[in-house]
Length: 173
Ligand SMILES: [Zn+2]
Image 1 (cartoon, rainbow, N blue to C red):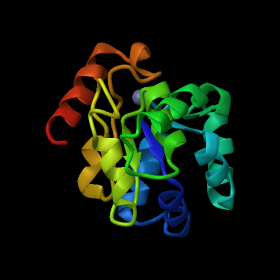
Image 2: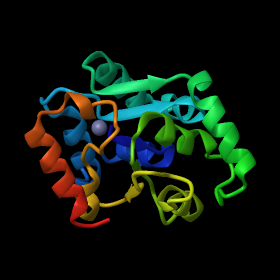
Image 3: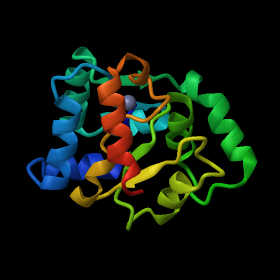
């Protein structure tokens, strides 16, 4: 799996759905090929559901099997370990980082300029491993819209799709 969308990114996506950077993310989630593409949950899930447009999208995507919620209980042990580990520069994003560790998602859609600490944490291999995390901010990062080894959809992908996504992501980080 795939991607995590931060609340600020979701809010701007909801305000400007036609902007290329947001349209690409939506089209990637909604493409007809089966498989979960977006994960959310915990404190981040609560924030996302405050955004009216995005909440409706989540209902639609959950129903279509394109997105998957993780419960706070599922995220709690990883979030606690991150808090106690003391490596995180970001302050209140333990659930977002835990979501990556628990689900296998390795792309975070983030307004990175506004949240440098979380962007650094997500790309820090001491925090997010063994697969590296990447931050999607603009359409220049479209190569990050891919499945990664270990994501929940990974085992169900045909070999061709696995190869394609490895190539797509391997080109740049
Ligand atoms: Zn995936």
